[in-house]
Image (cartoon, rainbow, N blue to C red; front, top):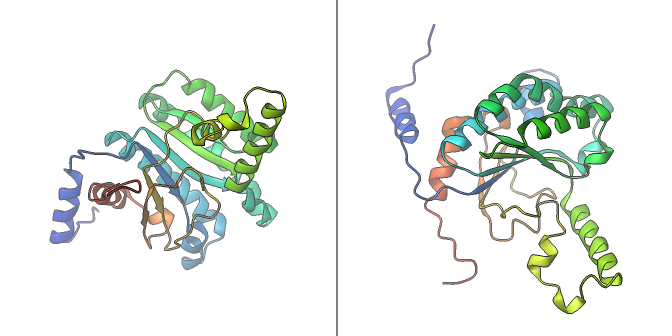
Length: 253
């Protein structure tokens, strides 16, 4: 039995479906928040929310591709997430393997390239193996870059960059006088990527949670009360449509 949308909602959905973006964001970053609360509202264990959220990722990748977004960076696992119960952490770190097992063929068909940012080497072997396989399999694709932030923390990233820079200065690779914002950016995980144009956070929270603190300096923020497992294509399109109305001045007039 198919469920029909109310007339006005259906009309609105069709209007959003038909939009053409004159100025799509080149790089969209998303803090995928609310999986646990989604599960709790339904009397389910938290991991059920994480599982549901995994399927949303595939749908959002499809929409991002359609609207010519070049980079999609998803906050999948933070350095602070290790503090969660071990069973939940173990489940979260098995999700990349499950996601890629199901959706990697579709990612290949859609010319998606997969990369990660964060401290990759300390992840469990099964997580690393699945992701490394996906990176290698998609390395020649030149479409959307699907960039998972795994074991990522922005403060750690910045301190790591400073330590590496100090080492290079000590080794006379460059001088302090040569240091500028671009040179510093080269030491971040996101070296070679443009900064996000649009940040989306779901679940009603309005904070950055140690995510891309340097890179988000001039990013447009878009918040929604919708929990991540309920974040759908229509809502994502609306965020892209709202982005069209933003005037990005970068401190100018």
